[in-house]
Image 1 (cartoon, rainbow, N blue to C red):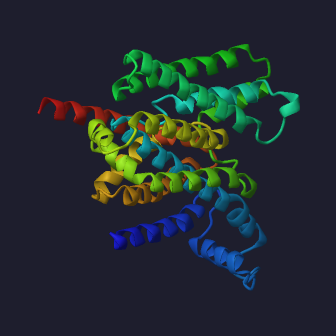
Image 2 (cartoon, rainbow, N blue to C red; image 1 turned 60 degrees about the vertical axis):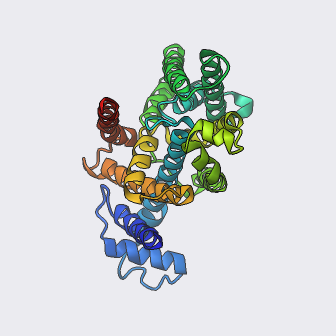
Length: 345
């Protein structure tokens, strides 16, 4: 198991170097490697010989922050998706389908279209996205509780999530409808398609902190996730307060997702695809190991998806959310077919 993780980390490092070289400006991998070594270890000896100042700016100040943002976002969305599937005991649950992402989207759209002067600043969108995600999660929880007669059932929570997802998407459309600023409307449309093109060194800190904290919390609580995946009744019998754990973790995930969505927009299906791929590759029942696998694979997936977004059509860049949706839609259909097939057997 340890060898597999070492191999995955090696592939992750290679992916970072390889994806930095991809883009409208052609950059050789040897230049990427040299710039990274020089910048990290402060050599500066090869400047002007193996690469130019322009190469340094592209590699170190433009593409590396973007690739790292892809790594952070991919890891965060994946482990949150894995956690939500365990919480709801449902393989098609993820923050996008359960309305958390659309709630954050509605909040962020409100902040983009109707900024409040006294709160103006870099974190206004993040704050409103968190409020939207939290509101969405509370609605899902309340509707699921009412629909289940007081005891939350995974199916009712999934259906409530889909209803709230539709409501929040409609709310975002309403904000766009009543908005008067064409620039704001264009910003929301671009933001809804998901992108990490605006990633900079200064924008990495907040999402990185959110994902690191999420990873630590999920690993600390891995035993509780493991008990829950064995069955709700079994987990209750073994001393886990399932209802309290489910609500606490759902709200925590909402904060993490809101932090990521406020920076990147909606990047769907990552939390759905990667946990399934992880389970196929990992072949382990250890929840800590599964979360580590999931974070690495999720990071690599978004890094390569973003590389495809900026490299497939030359100078014309495709939004990242479109790439993940093209992959995630068919994958979701595949999961539904396989689930129905197993149900018939």
